[in-house]
Image (tube, rainbow, N blue to C red; front, side, top):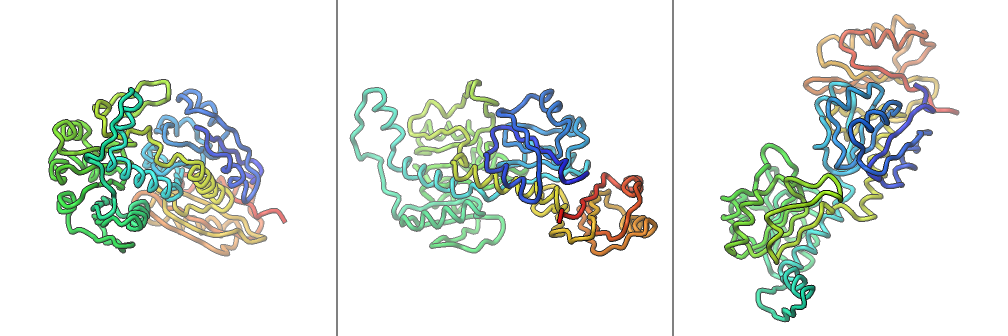
Length: 409
């Protein structure tokens, strides 16, 4: 495939800044679809696409991947990748990229704003004034200064939040399954339960995994300090919302802010229902933690640049489902062979034998493996026979193969 024949399909209103980033290393034809297409429309649109860019609503399963044999990579223009069958994509030699850090500031700001709004009991006063009421009272309203904030998951968002909260005078505690360097005045806690009992407000910043699903169940919600607040702006399956509703009902939890839900509407035309809607001191938002213009622009640039580097350099750095290789720019006079393959003994030997028989000199070579697949990249010098790529594709274990020509002078 020549560099001029690459094409990208971008759906769900991926930010326009992605276009320039996709063309960083060479021309890529870009087609856009404004909404999340249904499977049939997506399959049709993918017929000629080299890469696909999606956000959170478009689900890419084995059926979609099987209908797009020419698809080389998927970019998730968001943090999560749960909407993609990562294992099936890897088995087909399709790396998946995302932008895990581009919207951290936006999420941290929303969380901090939610803390202040809840502790001032703004939501119930806002609901009342819209209905003609006038709840001018200090009852139950507090400053955040000197209050104890518990952060579950001290990654990029949690750590950034701790610095911002410390600046407001909050006492910050955090719990993480791995040792993390504390920022500001933050202090690590030895157990989640100890932190829950200690803090005035608890906020979740962990991914969805088998270990974190239903993390805040009935028992842990009841282990929280009476009259405290719970915030979930991470993943919808971290909290048992029915248990949270019961805790709000009897006053054990004073308020909550939730941006993500176990079941979310697939479009703005579908109705949203939750047991949390009947309470006044709650902040419910439609999965907008990273929905700022700044975050969407950063996500567009980040994910698109990773796709462009894969197409033009074969780089799989930061892929979430693939062995990570960073071969760098291709030097003049060489072509780059990129070969995802089954991880089994002997493949690299067979690959090098094929290059030698073709009369090619291996100027540089890179290999990384995961338990199931490997990814080999070789920079080759010399005139390759016309059927060289077919020879590589015929090797035992090859999943797919491509050649990247040297950049134009």
